[in-house]
Image (cartoon, rainbow, N blue to C red; front, top):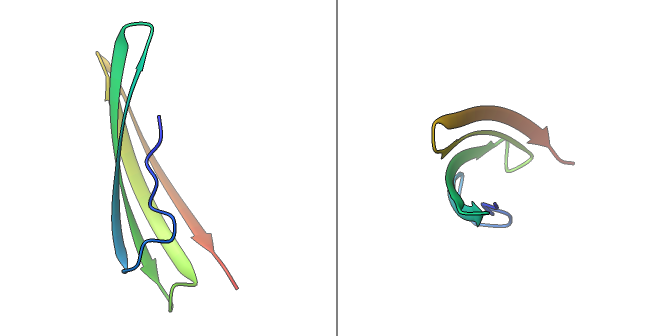
Length: 63
């Protein structure tokens, strides 16, 4: 499952993803906020599949 927000213009980015494997479906959504003149970002995401779910958070920087 993928949700791609790479190289999108703007400080706020939202990505969606959906997948299916062996008859099981899943959905994911993520949010990314860029700051410091697009040299740093923070992102959060969540996914759900049937009775299972997950959440995550990440950060990154560039120079």
